[in-house]
Image (cartoon, rainbow, N blue to C red; front, side):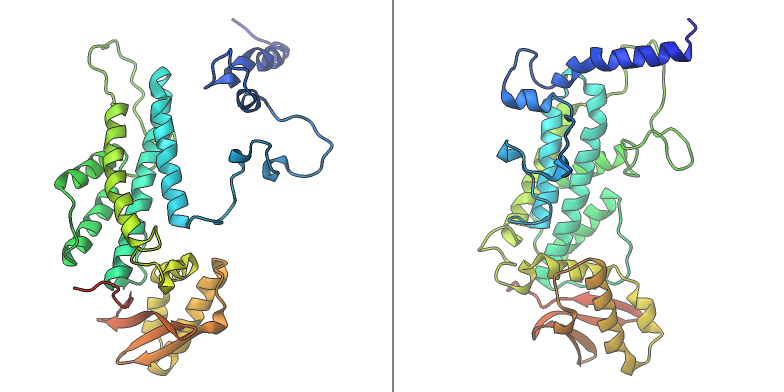
Length: 333
């Protein structure tokens, strides 16, 4: 069938109207509630110059605060991706092929964020050292191996091999993290096979129910650790300087900075100043609510103590031309 450009434009404008019924999803077509009506609508024209996207909604539960008002960053990111994953799995029964893409991405991203956060929490609580200048890994198996090693070195591991096997199985489905986010990789190669086949007996599938159970298992173990370390008034980090998310952000920023190269090229009497400059840059670049003038760097027993208002945040020290960062341990043996 041949089309003219005029026909394309006509059909396009007509279909925009005809397909409006699809916006009713996930509500039943007979659902006439205010919420169903609001979430099935498109934006209305308005003379109001304010941005409606950042204006308050009449449905107060749908006003999502930008930034951190009550919960910390770790909770908001992890809980958000986990709950979004659960909602996707619950609604996937009527279109599992399209729901697979966001479901696997959210599952993978939740695990990556949670492992990184708990590695940081455990390291702070135990006073384990951070290697300064390491690039962040996106490989789940690599992260889970680091997590396991950290727990075992500090006598804290209660995890069964099942925990690590589940993470490895999800990592194998998406080892580069992008396979279920983008159609093609950076070289233009399709991430997933395009396979037209008549073999309907044994297609390659991912069981979304099992995927949901897998993530439940991971969530149960990681959230319970997060609760012990940071999430409540009796947690390990409560009433310490690291209860402040900006302080944790400063530690994280320094640990992932390039200051190691700078310090290796500096004379001994320059190092304290170079560390202070790095910290000021991390604070500025990340809009951390910390006054750089409140930061002090003191040399002590071969290491450099970083203090905030006379409270020790962490120590920076050199070992075999590599620079490391560690906190004072918060746990008793």
